[in-house]
Length: 272
Image (cartoon, rainbow, N blue to C red; front, side, top):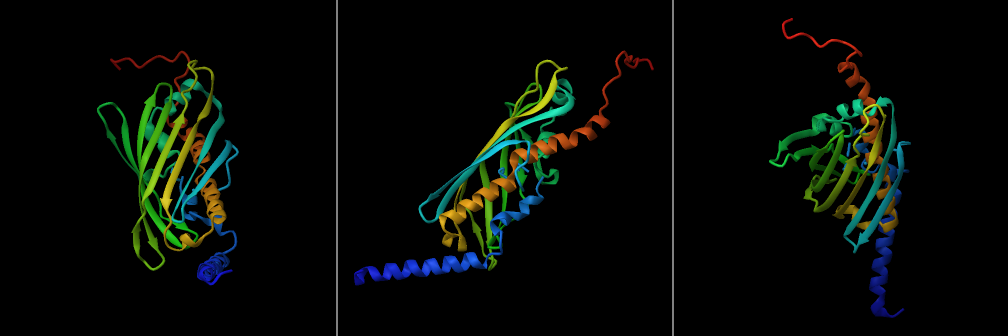
């Protein structure tokens, strides 16, 4: 090795030693703790939450995409399939239950963190979904807000779209840093069957991607560690699982509060 190549070699060795030291300093299974605070979310969670728990059985599978863009930026995302029977519920009843967009969003996001909606002239609903503080393996914390567009369709169908995430990271020394994040989320809940007496089902898909600059000590992590963190984030986000569990879990209380009329029951007279 020539002398002119020695400094870069020493620098690479130094970075390698610092990276190894940093990884050893992280508690075991820390990648499973990435975004640990989001395990408390009942969110898309964003998406994007989520968007970020073990995959739910209701999911047809989670596909994780990861790309490192240079030294300072990463892009990752995932696709979550929804395929779950709505056992014991008819399509017409499920459509009524899912007709409230706030109820649909609250199935996957804490209601107290949902702000809105603002109603546009074309009927699109705009919500702000605030996320609980995310802790990235004890290295930094992140606070953010997801801008969500909601479009309704007949028979309980809903489309969720977001292309903006406002996010601020706080380093361990207390310094706050705006985190440039490119965020996209598309989710859909398919309409129920046109026959109101058919069996209901939860079907649809969530797809999201996030591209962000690495900050602080994350710059020193090698790509395999970052990819493992991205997989852990997808599992913790569990967008499809959270959504499905929320929809199914909250239905019984709604059904008790909104009982179906008994067959043959007479409508109350206006004179009574």
